[in-house]
Image (cartoon, rainbow, N blue to C red; front, side):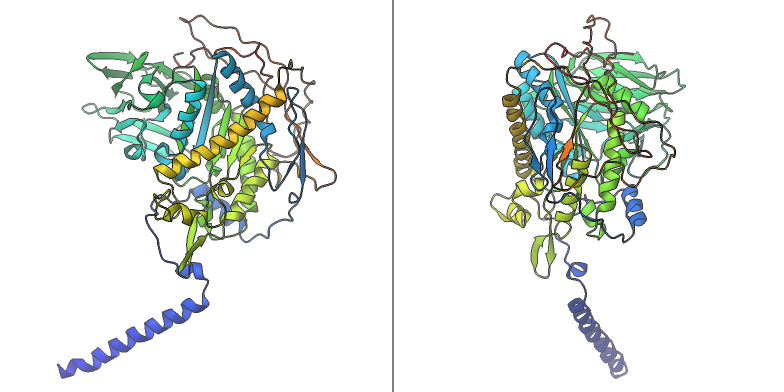
Length: 560
């Protein structure tokens, strides 16, 4: 024992010195480096494209703020002009006018439909937030069905708006971590392949839940891409019925309607390897439908990698009127307070989305509040305000509407209150909402959308919509293929005021098709906005929507 005493004292001394050193360095290092991990953060991740963007940006000094203290004015659209806004309180209702007009005609006539693509990260995982917004809109404007659901999903076990199961022999490629997919990503940011297994073919199961306007699976329609496979079939089990249908993967995007309305079904994919599959759509073709495209770890930047031709094909069949971009959770974790790089990247993403979905309106929802432990106290993370500001800036420059979720929550310190109140509205990770909190967030989003909608109806009144001016001719082709650093115009300071435009050419009414021969309805092309030479392809303008031009969309999802 005596021989071991020197080693014991030496070991003890090393431990004491280490503790003293740790306390010393903690006192001089930034507080956030040695903060304690609070709660479950497994859903907070980052996508590979964002990591590349951060590395490329380096430690670039932020550019001079040209938007702060700016007065933003709008030009009349459909005879409606919203009042000027300050940058600080920007909402951009003017840029939702086409969406609002579609809602108003739907509310008046009960005819037609409106579709929303809701892109988000882990905040909308498991249909959180989106399911409540969908419920609110369908309760008011009609519509049945949960919308588009992927072949497979990591959030399927936590989603309570549909029961979703799938085989283990599906191969998945995601736009978060694959630059060059075998086949283009679908509108959900993924593409799925059935692994060859003659004994155990890949399968999926869907079952409706008894909730609101999603208590059945109306018009289940499979979406899949192009392949040279001519042997593939799908075998559907619904109740006591078994149906086998041949797959015809000859087009850029192909659809197969399985039936009219199911409560549940299982689908086996026979000899279907090499065919890119995307998912099923469940909707009745009337009212409002909201597709939840949540991806854990998404910064929003991967949306810029969509294949334009394939997205236009999706848009021809689904017909999106509004795209929602709700990101921020993963941007907060990159360790910087400079987000000019993110602002510029997302401007290009919005421009690309408008190219993929011609005429669609865009809504940007800012990051929510997030708390981090500084010392012994939980406080709003220092990156929250800079990220929300960058999101507002790219919304203004891109002529998109904007919801400041951080502000609506209560601003500084609000996440702490949401977590610690009884009952709690958010989880102990001080980042993600629980079901109660998600419902409240949905109500806040719906409230601001509805505020703009009611204002639009008052401004619109009963007036006859005037024709829009002739479209502006596009500039000559760019002399270089390298995109400019900032592909949108810089908004001027207070004098003169900023003017944003959103004019559309008159539309040609779409002829109603016979019920038995549905065909894809392609949205009319629209005018191209002027943008500086050397930028991404300009956004196209949506056609005028009037009571005379709005018709019920044909059932295009069953087209072969």
